[in-house]
Image (cartoon, rainbow, N blue to C red):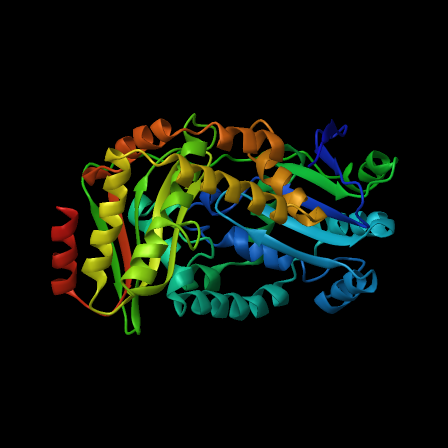
Length: 424
């Protein structure tokens, strides 16, 4: 599928090149190893807010309209994202426009104004973004589940922060955080697509000025759970959204790929076990999905679903029964083969474009793990056996390891009923 080369500029900024034959586009992606896990409680939400501010203007492009027009003029797609462990800024353009893309991204990162009036105006935008997530339980449930897992710690707080924090942030907060967390010591520049021979010289031209920074690492997560946990957010909704899962493994763990396959078997497709039973056989929900979330120092597997009111207990029992079944019975050869073939096909589809390949490598590079090509990744998936699946299921699907988060109407009676099922 792809090869890559990794070079380092004189300022120690890594430049990861992923050439793709047959494409007419190129993607520039700057990944920064910072996010909400790197914030103090007072700073919570600062990483996400700062991401917004980079699009508000530079010395050369004095406002958001001027900067957006510069991107639009080259026909580029562009955006940014903030997660708990990294932040990314990307632009995808026709291959001939690579130098302009590098110029624009570097200008944003090196010369943003961070104007006080832009900050005050953007507070309203971010508060409404937080409100949007609050009003969509399927978006919000992941945040609530991680709060259930990690409590009042950087790992358990929302990426967007709180409304109270957002309203208090001032310009010096952003300048201080930017100078500490953004720089050559915590970033990786990824170039993917149709690359010219002089791509490294172009990277030097626009990113050699990226300063070294006194980057601060995140607080390590402490896994202390000894009994089931439940966290509920009661509000008037037309269904109950729940997430029921278990603590698992961090990135690089020997069973990382076993966990990924377990998640697909349980709820990763329309033929998966939980999708079939909860939706098709019982009609309890429309949306059913099991996923494995893997961070640098922790991970988990969880099943998320929007359940018909009054059927929460039935759904929880079905999920738990399926978790336990994997601990006792071996997955059949045909089911395992179907899962692996589906994985292979979906990966090929997802990595067809320059921006998706840039993300594939950028996500790995910024957390400093050994880079894995798609081909190497699929070999690790292929190596997972039915015995591996049962062994890992026995390890993670334990009563004391359960966590349940839910959003919907109800109160103490519903909570007590669910606690009984979880065997509190």
